[in-house]
Image 1 (cartoon, one colour):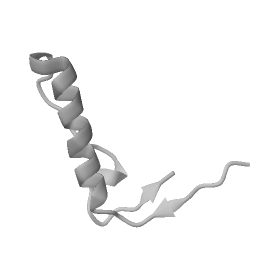
Image 2 (cartoon, one colour):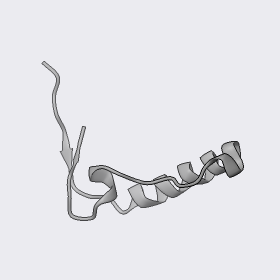
Image 3 (tube, one colour):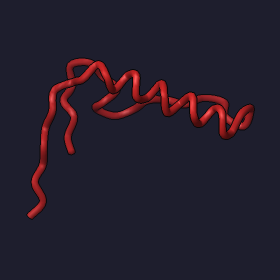
Image 4 (spheres, helix red, strand yellow):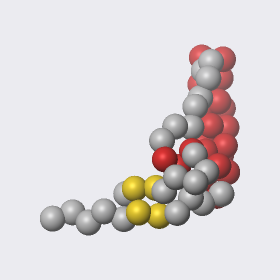
Length: 50
């Protein structure tokens, strides 16, 4: 059976998203209109579920 791990919000997730978004913009350039950070890791106060 797979274990589920619940973690408290981590401010570092915001920085990780920004880093990934920057890389995607470098790769795809003007083809990208918007990149959105969604899910539990994007909302302060929610816990992450793995």
